[in-house]
Length: 360
Image 1: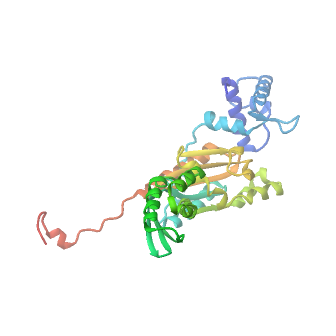
Image 2 (image 1 turned 180 degrees about the vertical axis):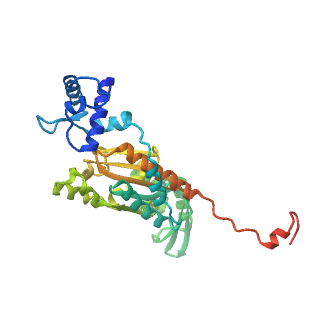
Image 3 (image 1 turned 90 degrees about the vertical axis):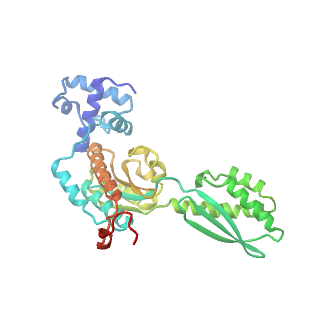
């Protein structure tokens, strides 16, 4: 969408002002702002033009304007200025992050609480596999004359198995064919790629063992989806009630009921392959109940094929630059913490005495 430099200036000023006040912004307020070198009448004309373009909204006839979701999106993508953390903020974040590296889940749950405290907004923290889990290999082992054990090994070297009953007319040779078909057709596929078309193809190729394919595919999909799930921690939900947008009890209840781990469990699939930081504004959100909120998420590397996600949920008028700066600072430091090498034991006296090339 093409905007003049003046229109960009007016839109940026309206968003910045609305973030701070939560009140519609009028032309007189804008005209009095430093650097706004034009009259109230000119600003009104530009505001009317921005409203026609769908970037501003007018809550009441005589009121000023507020940004629309499209206005926030353009602001985030093109107009938002970088936020520089103050020395006090940096020190506070560093103090908050002085954690003992214990179990990952415990650290991530603490991170969620820290982010909520430092942003004064509900916070989300989770871990997820950096790559979608897939099956690396299928094995079929005869258990008895009328059953076999299906063994599924994933790309993370996790092994799951299931006892499956054999049809009466199925031979060991039939099972060898089934194993070959499974390894040729279903390996290296994420759960969402195992479509009905793939299922039909496997079934047609499986010969006398075709009746077992749906059971095998169902179990395989369950294993992959289970591996894709991550622990999700959501804290600070009640902080939303301090925002003017949620003084309406019904609106607040609708949003609060959606701030749980189930709502955010689908985030990794949409974020891990994209930019390091993502901002979902209003209707872009993952749940209908969050259409009037924004979600800012940042990812970081944990190691061992895992990544972490931290983020906040707040009103669409949140200070995106400040929130993004704080989350990025958290993420960078968490990445460094998780990537620290394990401490090495000091050499023993025996090792010191032994010269290179000596045999013990």
